Structures are given as C-alpha cells and as structure tokens.
Image 1 (cartoon, rainbow, N blue to C red):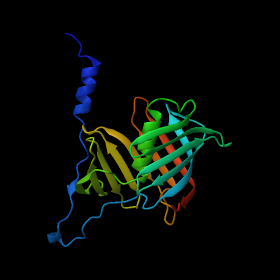
Image 2: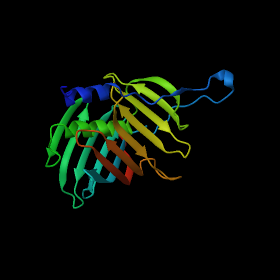
Image 3: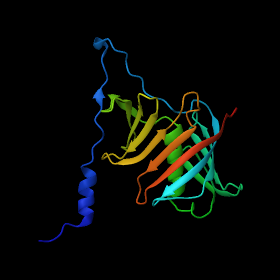
Image 4: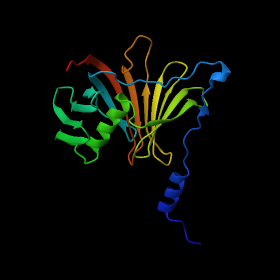
Length: 218
C-alpha cells in the first residue's frame, strides 16, 4: 500500500479545523443585559514603549525595546526595535496600506518580518476592519465578538470573568494564527502586559511589558 503524501495529510488536517463554537447571545425576551463587544483597542493616537522578550524554539532571546506609534483615526502605524543600549535594529511604518521599511538588520531583515510585525501591531492596538459576524459566549463563559475580515480571516475578541481580554486570529479554514493575551491587574494600563503567540512555520511568542504610554497630539 502506498503511503499518503505528507502534504496531502497536512492539507486534510488544516481543512478540518473549525472555529470555537459561540453560543448565541441572550435576546431581549430573556430579560438579561445585551452583550457588548470587548474593546481593548486604542481610541486616540498613542506612542507606546515596551520591553519585549522573544521566545522561539524553546529559548528566550535577550530583551529588546519596541517603540510603537499608532493612530486609530488613520490606521497608520510606525514602529522601531532597539537594543537595550539604544541601537536601532528595525524601523518601519505603514500608511494607507503602503509598507515602508527604513532599517532592517539581522535577524529582522527577512521579507516577511516587516509585514507580520505591522499586522501584529494592528491586531493588538486597532479594532478589526471587517464586519461583526457573531456575538455570544464561549464554552468557558467568556463574552466574545467574532469579526470576518475581507481576506476571509476570523478575529475573536473575548473577555473573561476575571477581566482579561484575548484576541485570536484564525485563517478562513479555522486554523489559529495569532493569540494575543492582555494580562492586567486592576488599575493598570491595559497594555501593561501583553503576550502574543504566533503560529508560523517557526512558532514564536512575545512577552511585552509596558515602559511608557503617552497620547500624541496631532
């Protein structure tokens, strides 16, 4: 008997993935409060500075500094990665869908890194551009809103009973691509502690600890 090619098995596995089931939100007739979509996203232009640890292949790399400027009104993003000593390793901005890489030193010089980084920043700080597809609760009781993006991706934004908020991005076929966790204590800035887990050919995780966050006046 001939063995089934690995590529075929991989395609079959991915095609069978499904999104988490959302139970419908309670209707007005139940007398319960209507559910409101969680919104951890920026409402005004901000500059944020985070200390970032990168975990890849089971190893933690040295901490780097991430500087992010985000304007939700125009959906423009500027970002830079620096060493603890202040050396700029990477710098890029995105405006109206155009990506401009100003500086990229190894290991941040791959063709896909800049796009993935901008997409991740938008996922964390900007509300989804798609349309709300469903609103309800997950099996663990978390309230969730599900968006459908123009490219077919799904974005779930959920809030748990303890107040922590998650963002999960899925492919059109239901495969998990990104998982963002806002881990905060009462009274802290919502961006104080952020975990991002990426599902790629080489999976990686980021732990972002807030150093400074300041609104920026136009």
